[in-house]
Length: 271
Image: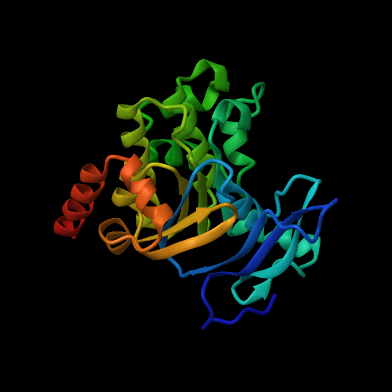
């Protein structure tokens, strides 16, 4: 595949997603943004705003009743919308990974964790499995590698899913509200680990969430979606401190605004 080395890693250009039965009435409309290698971008908005549909469109994982009805998605300058199924599978196999909301439903309930991680990449050895489990903060990787999902806690399952996504060192990791099912203490530990791991490996991170505190901790840029459209985009500090759109202001008013702003300040001081 020929790529353009000067182009962004990912470009979502005027993306529209519609149902098959109503192609002229998109439920995601004219979404545009780009990402470079190592970027950390968060998509925020209420349920039904189009966050997950946008991400699943990038991965080609839309439900059969949905389709990309307009715009384009380019990976390394090459259209994924017009890409052959074989080439798309190759990109997904090597360059893109996703971490889902609920690992208990996303993981195979009958398969040991080690086998699921080995299937996450090509030529993954058992040593690779143990190394990545250790890297995601699992203290007893041998035991966890042998376990099946229901034998692990929610936090351990989510770490195992991140290990499965990262074992191939993807260039882009998409995380679709990956800590929804976790309590607050475990949530922060998992998010911190995921941030550190992607940062060390130079992996771009596209993070879907409704938690602006999480955005303040993890994202360089934030995209705000409302009713299937992008209503605001900018640096995290700018959007959280001086939101321009009324919907963004309402999101901030409904969240822990003081905490979000404090986290931005702490992150800037940490840099």
